[in-house]
Length: 136
Ligand code: TYD
Image 1: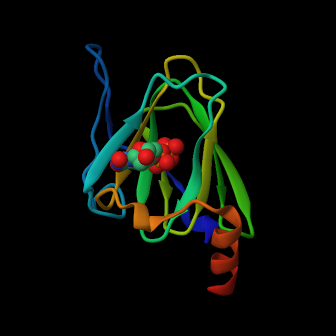
Image 2 (image 1 turned 90 degrees about the horizontal axis):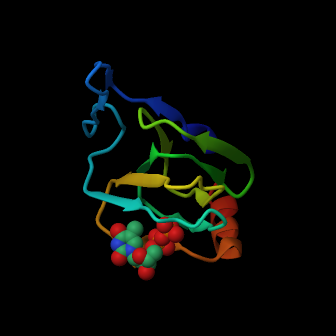
Image 3 (image 1 turned 120 degrees about the vertical axis):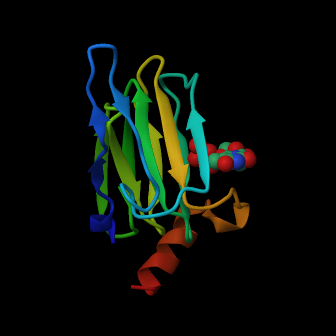
């Protein structure tokens, strides 16, 4: 399961006037985009995430600065360090994630396959782990 979570290099139009990156749903990433949100003004010692989604697909991008993303499928774990606005981390459903080690002035942008829905969250790790282990 965790092997489905991969870094996706995004199109990058380099230009002496400034670089440009664009993302087209279902073309550059494996889902249609229904929602965009971003974390900003994050204190350096802060932790975000700490949950899993039942059905949501996401692409996480360090639009500025850098941070770490810890992923777990209930069995295996992986840590990614994101520090480029032209690389996104695809996170499939049923993955626990925690974000930390935010640099100063970092911005974390997330593209999501669906609207916000609290019912799509697992916010208790033990509950998530039990369900994910029993469904594989
Ligand atoms: P949460 O997803 O727990 O944030 P993070 O994973 O980044 O730490 O969301 C924090 C709060 O914001 C929670 O009360 C739900 C709300 N929220 C929305 O209303 N809409 C959204 O699109 C998101 C992502 C969160």
